[in-house]
Length: 207
Image (cartoon, rainbow, N blue to C red; front, side):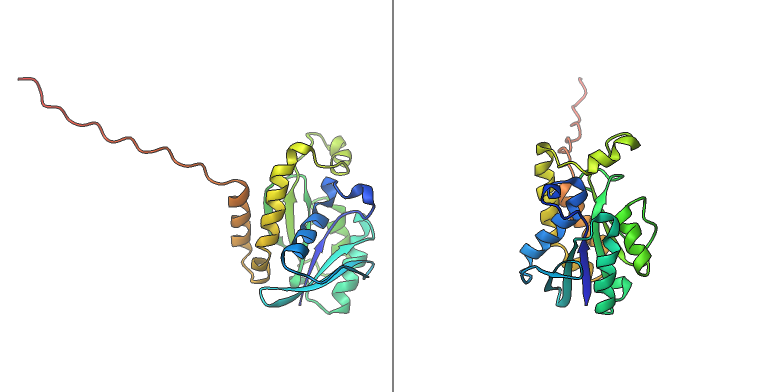
């Protein structure tokens, strides 16, 4: 069994915040892959379903971001899910908007939700970092993540959520490198190469 947790804050006014992109990601997985209706459980909202033939529990902690570990850890312990089969989706200010990075274990990178989860379970869980961009100065970070995405972000955000959900089975299959590659191609497709110019034709010398 796997646990996929998306991080965010539960107030209705927070729904469109950059900090809530983890909630958005698991909502899109829920809709894309036919999971069961959400229900209150583990101090959050939980839903059962499957990906790549494996049972998966989706979870949106309602404990607020800084206490995410209380909800995620409770679900992980209840089902005795190994840390290596826990995947957490969350916002990453140090990534370009739309970029996706997946890694197993490591530090919190200053993210309070990840710090809380790491304090409640083994740190070897998977982190899916979803780029939301940086405001340019550390003093602006908190208002940046706690404000809604701009209208100009909507195009790339929808593409990102679509591919993050569509390719989610790859995470269960252990194909994290392919997952990142497919996300990158969807958001940042390679530019077509210009046509190669034909080599110059030789002309007969004048006689």
